[in-house]
Length: 331
Image (cartoon, rainbow, N blue to C red; front, side, top):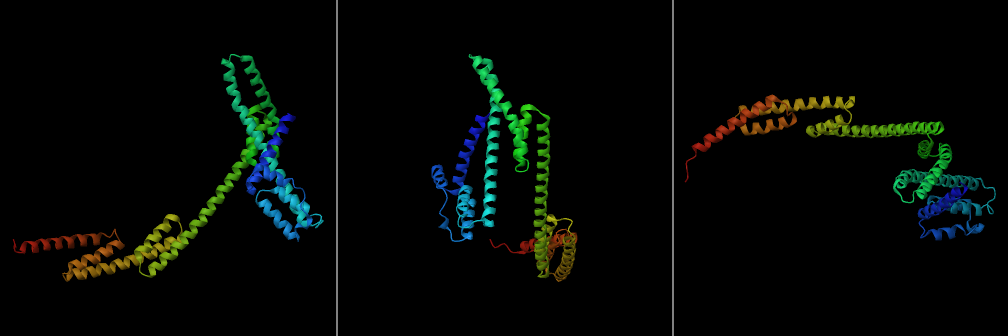
């Protein structure tokens, strides 16, 4: 098991070097490795503590935490016992340790998953393989290695509980799959409970953010609708109010503005209807039709307007037919 852990640490170091290289934008892992082996930087490279911390943060932001630590450590000779530098060193050391631990646990999960997926295949292979003894030995070795991962997975679930609850769940689930132990089951249940709480909190936060966004949109629509109503653009104002109602059907301000707008619409329709009636009585049928059509746009459900329009258009059509029949044939 010691050899397995040592091999895993070597892989973690290589992964970390590649990760830092990608974060820093260097051309190769080898170039990044040579940079990290240059040793302490000259203490006189920086004029002030602010210069030191700025350079360290620049490296850290690029994902090159080890170089950030090199800069900070080299500066201790020139700025001994500086609390700002000491605080950053402690912070970056912890970040580096956290990253190494996370990578180790991820490698453990990858190895465990590979074993769990290979064992069923080895079992099938053993049944029909001509060299059955050899495949059986491979199968037993794989099962033994898988069983040896169970304590490591339990340890992973415990260590990562306060760091990364999702890795904790994966480690606990793998351990429970291997052994079905009470400890693994308890760790898995606790992890799933915490994750459910986290997801619920995130859902609530998203819902609150969407509610604030809707409320802001409703306020904007109400402001625009009120302005358009005051300017006489009643149809446009109604569109805005309807949209606000879709956003928040129970909003009392929207309902109040809808009532106010409807009163304006009713008054406008009544005025237009009377104007159309006056034009119609004076035998200005075409003008009356135009006015009533405008009124119908404001109130599409007004039955009296529909009846007036139908009657006026019928009369207008009959008059046109009479005029057409009265015209002499010019052929």
